[in-house]
Image (cartoon, rainbow, N blue to C red; front, side, top):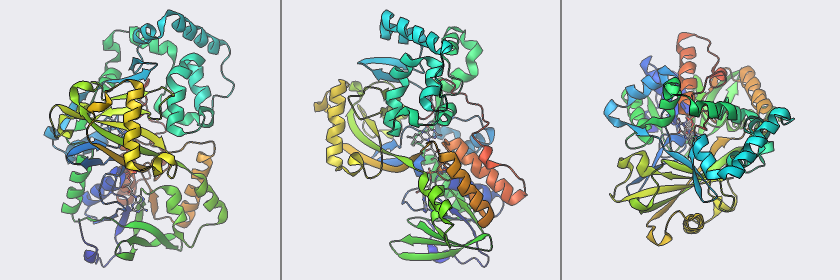
Length: 484
Ligand SMILES: Cc1cc2nc3c(=O)[nH]c(=O)nc-3n(C[C@H](O)[C@H](O)[C@H](O)COP(=O)(O)OP(=O)(O)OC[C@H]3O[C@@H](n4cnc5c(N)ncnc54)[C@H](O)[C@@H]3O)c2cc1C
């Protein structure tokens, strides 16, 4: 990576905060217009949440990262960065593990019916008919929104427990926006109808749900390559430097202050493109914004993520890419099988690596537990579920990812609007992009698209509204949760 001593532009550079998908996309796009941006990254690896972690040769994602998009410029960019031979087209298999049984996911009525049994199925259908007659009063929450579409009984079996594990709060405290973004058009009637319809009528949806693209060494491969391209264009990437301050004056950000093991740096900027969490961006402003803006920043929260990766014999693991664990008697929420994502993630034939995923809050008991204890917890929970013989489990690794999910609580929108409003008045050359950068539940494609449109605005004078990305978009995963 570039050394800071080379920062000697006569004119202040465009500074980009974060070398995740959004930041690197912005840098790469700027490079195409002969701009030489400076990317500042707090961590020692690129890719942000879309990195690939490597431990003793085992490769794993922060959650599995499928590459799918309905935004053609994004898919073009993926294929521009990585040659076709680096992409695998993977069959998707995912199921829900509930009460000792596997349910196909996305849900298939015949399979669900068989597993639930006749009596429970009748109860579910009656419960669905009941919500048609008497819909939940408050459909602004995840609970009301989802129950209105599948009935209370199916909601409790297939949505409530898992969702509460993810967010760590009751589902009636989560906004429907999250459900609406992830499971748009969810409706039991159309689910049954789609399942019975001939496949050709659902070709577009089915092909995206049933297979996806994946870089053979994991998503990090895309971002490692992209960072090489950025540097080949003349852009610079300053790793291990955390942005802690932004001096602004006369309505513009002027200086970015970073901290690293080497100390504090002051870097002039002409424009600032930021994928760091928007509340932290605003809190870093010098002079500080008024109290109500700081209160709004404080009001935005996140959910954090922890993976316990366990090496196990391949023939003892399940064939799925991942399974959702809905049982309330274990803390883990989902299990990835990284060997099923790409055989090249696995250094030893006959073995695979499972990623046990825990949704946590920075500083809580799981977050602060010793790795050894977390590995033991993972092994115990696999035993409780009856999924694997614990005596056959090999190495274990723990990876923590702070701020994996921007929280959609009842005031998040209002808080984001306050921060946006303040930035648009007081720091007109600051451009928030990406996922946490906009506090928006964006996947890679939408995170990247906000960066692409921002660069377009900067270099071509267009006026795309990046805040509309992932608001009006149609979703192919109508019955699914794309990353959950
Ligand atoms: C469990 C899980 C599964 C997912 N699955 C998928 C999937 O299947 N497909 C998909 O497309 N997307 C998926 N996503 C979403 C995807 O990870 C994100 O959309 C994407 O990584 C967001 O990119 P970004 O650049 O906006 O942010 P990030 O990836 O968060 O990158 C931001 C970067 O900024 C850096 N940074 C933050 N603060 C500072 C600071 N103060 N100074 C300097 N640097 C800073 C961070 O270290 C980080 O590298 C998933 C996410 C999760 C949590």
